[in-house]
Length: 247
Image (tube, rainbow, N blue to C red; front, side):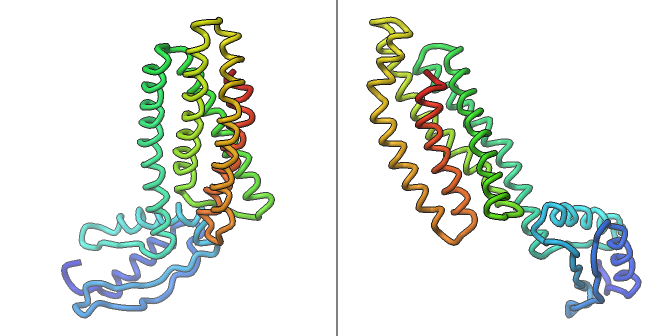
């Protein structure tokens, strides 16, 4: 505030925070600025400070402090607050990036295949495979590795990698299908294109999966998670989606 912080101001802020559910322990002031216009005190959560409940609680704390009035201004910092901002930023990025990526891919497929239905089907196969792959990996992380959460940026990184790589194989296969279908018909053309491109797509998928699997060996959670998701996803795209679902 403009003048020195009074004990009553600190008490009002602490009392506002006590109304936040599961707030935990609120300490006495631990520091004060030289001009007396800022005072700091700590709040210790009773649960994991990186859990979603703890991150949501920081938003509730900010709302509680915002109701103190215009003469007082409260800030919430620390690990949970930083991670809450990081999570919210990652979610905002996902709502922007995911539709843009899908739109660009859709327009690219329309230009390549000169069709509307086929690109829609291919986009649908990519989205379906992504959710299946990501879901299986989350079960693996939580049930096998015992993880209680994952990095907020993991979904968008996994989406970009898997969609980009999956569509790359789609374009490679469907361009050959279109070429063969002009000469011998759609069904026979699809089979011939699958035979012609199968070895290349398979070998490329195995090499790429092995490359990303190296990341899963590193003792850094986000790299382990990305490496596992992308390596598994590339294998699924190579041997199931591109070999059976799309044809």
